[in-house]
Image 1: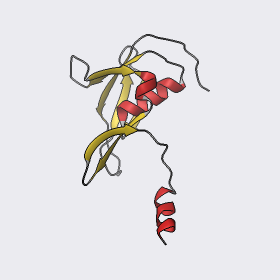
Image 2: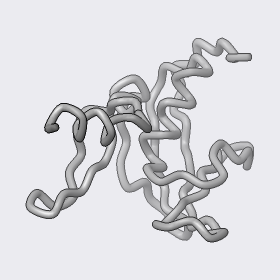
Image 3: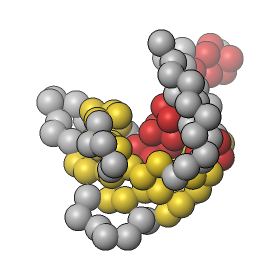
Image 4: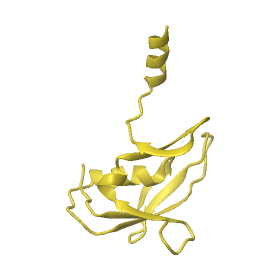
Length: 116
């Protein structure tokens, strides 16, 4: 059940490395700094996944992102804007921040079918 919380206040999250259990790629744990609540146990794209979760709970304020052990935030952005972003990495383009699109398990299958 989504919690409605018209809270325009800043929500500070902390990102730390999460233990891997036979899963490829780095994962991160995301917690709310003021309560210690674990929002996401193993995220691939922690800043943006946390923003989407906070938005789904009705938060409307700013998102401050802290990496574990750092005293100052790495960035500050409106939750609504951050929820629309994702990180991607390509062989030719490198690391990029772009528009978020929901993941589809069929996306590679669809592209292969279109090419046939």
